[in-house]
Image (cartoon, rainbow, N blue to C red; front, side, top):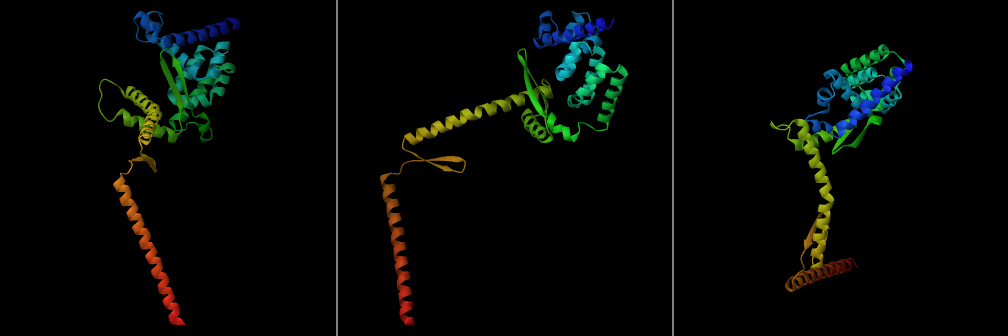
Length: 275
């Protein structure tokens, strides 16, 4: 009996992996369904709660590799996986990532009541504002980027400073203060992030273009002088300008020589009076 239960868990884990690949490739559209959950209900014959549970299993096993391994080995049941998935939806993915090892241990070796109590404790702590311990927050920061068929999936945890900077940059470009009936806030943030990436990618090309323009002006006889971060191009002086500048320099040199001579004569005069 125990072996059969383990095999059932392995089949459920394999089904979750297949559903994930099916969703990544957007194959539901081939049968006229907008989403994989809808396909599971309409074509697969699952109930709404069962289809939703299947999609949650895909998300949480991708989030927690230790849970995915235990599920695939048959030591964790679909019910355990769904309980952890529901908890992650309530308290945040970063919280369950921190306590993944404990949750997997409870799901593997303890009864459903022990796992339920731990998950309930996490939800209560989140309600009191107790999130990830401060000494462990930095170790959880990171961003992952992966392919989902023709699309990309971006997921990560940012520290408070980085999150605030990114939110300011994206929300500024997204124009979330304005009304847009056709696109939601999430879609506008996506477009703003794309615009930031395009601007950053265009910077090296723009620097190369400016450097090429400067080199072209230098080749034409211009003199380039760096002033701070700007680049100023000076055209060659005409013959008249060169003569005028030479006269000015000569006049300044002559004036300086007369001033020095006058100073020496005054010193000699004072020395003679003392004698």
